[in-house]
Amino acid sequence: MKFWYQQSWLQWLLLPFAWLFQLITYLRRKAYQTGIFASWKAPCPVVVVGNLSVGGNGKTPLVVCLVEQLQAKGIRVGVISRGYGGSSTEYPFLVCANSDPQKTGDEPVLIAKRTSAPVAISPNRRESIELLYKAYHPQVIISDDGLQHYKLQRDVELVVVDGERRFGNGHLLPAGPLRELPQQRLAEVDAVICNGGIAQDGEIAMQLAPEVAINLVTGEQRLLTTFSQVNAVAGIGHPPRFFATLQQQGLTLVKQYAFADHYAFQATDFQPIDNAEIPLLMTEKDAVKCTAFAQENWWYVPVSAQIETTQLNHLIEKIMSKVI
Image (cartoon, rainbow, N blue to C red):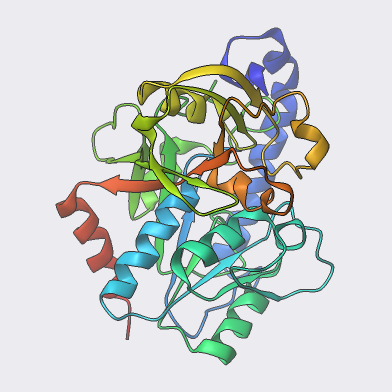
């Protein structure tokens, strides 16, 4: 919501509800910390990659990066996700590269395609872990989101912060975008990763770097710099970030269309956008939902999380120290 990131009379109107939300979340977390509410310990270490605010902050590229780094060291990694945006009614569910993103959600399919790691989805994260552990016996589980899912104990907590939008107006839901207040919570996590913008003291800087565009129909790869004028579409948490990325690569955006995060694309959505003479570029997350009806001039732009080598190695070492 736009008023979360600017001054508005509406945020002040909603502040009493935000205070109530703060009280409820505080009492809930304390109940788990003191044992009033039971939490569950997984049979292997769990790394939670989450955020404090609503909307896309760049968690999934970081998950992909961590999985690839751990796999390179010979570690068996499993990934769990809620499967947000999917329509499945059967949980837990094992996701593969060919799974239907309309059923499983787009991010789990993206992770499975990029990493070949086993991925399980369920609102009940314990069920997902038990399924993965029985089928694959992973040495570590990475949870894409779930920072506030205190029913699941975790060994490492990583928080991704949008370096440009930061924490918006600083208020909790519904007056602002926050699920928890950053002042105390960020001091308790293992690392804060700043996606874009300028990292503050103690934060790890991360950039999402695009290099190529991949054709949805043929699989052909082209350097982004070989494009000139393009149309662009994005159904992610913060579409302007994708559009700005393309412009930073020197591309001219003839048309740009922003959709809601996890939007369930249909072929008809592209009728006002598609033009055989102008390439259409989209995010990798959107592409997994558009392959079935893609046209020959549709391309997606995968991004990779780039973190300074020493800091990335430190993150991987922290995770590996938990692996038995």
